[in-house]
Length: 64
Figure 1 (cartoon, rainbow, N blue to C red):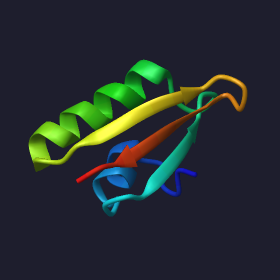
Figure 2: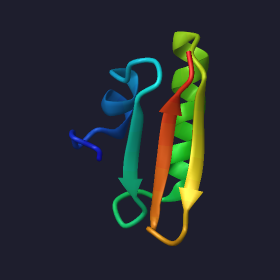
Figure 3: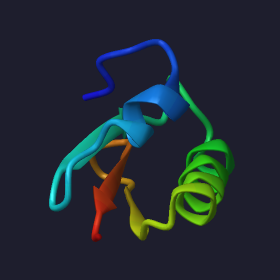
Figure 4: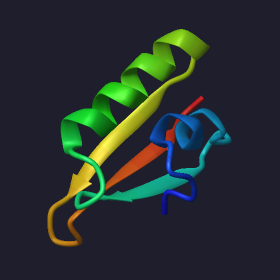
């Protein structure tokens, strides 16, 4: 789960292969996806974002 109030800081501190789950009650899907895309571009990393509608959350995975 997101351990900090800042989604950007949480995503920036992720290690390769780490998965962070963000409840859709805390952040909108578009905000999560945009944050991962912008940080990936700024830091030269790749993130994937997937929605789990059943659990009502997004999974962010750092791929490199």
